[in-house]
Image (cartoon, rainbow, N blue to C red; front, side, top):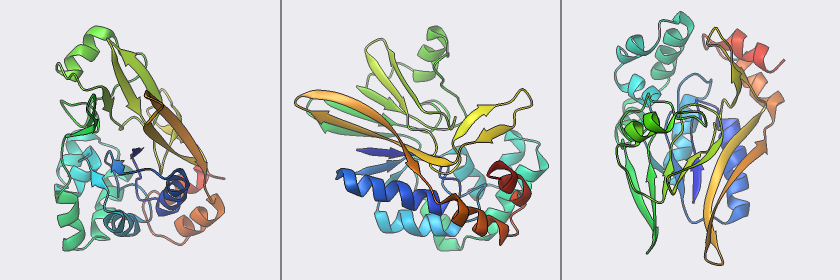
Length: 240
């Protein structure tokens, strides 16, 4: 099973990841949410995900597309708010209906003994953040007693593998906007590749592989430069 997350309107990165996925001959692809905001290609990403037939989780940014007022409760950053609105305007009603079909949680049986629970932030909320340093007591509250073999979420844009009380916690990172770090001012620094994860079994042993894939950043920068997305200048500076 390939886990992808936080595509954020970057179809160039999604194409690169799915090409890598095809080489790995995975059985299914699950998207953990935040597919079509903050990047210059929201509609292209939706079209590609529809064609792929991937199961999708509802991320907080997916909710913002359906309820534009919700972004104001999440951030006061004017460029982010403007960009979410810009991305929503690139989508037609059928695209929004597709986003509306995303689910908050998804539980999948990988075999007789292995269950994968998928969410965006945590099983409790798509705005929760789980990190390697989240204290155990806080993590217990975030997981709400979930007992799946593997718990997979995104949201932080940071790849993670963590074991907690016999459970595997996986964050595949971000396809479209992987973070190197988040500064004290809350502004991330983006990395020039795409990230995802593969969960699989080999010779009876369950494993998780965090993967990074090269992206044609020159092509992506050309698309950003030709766009009137409000985050245009910030994105170009990230990849200069």
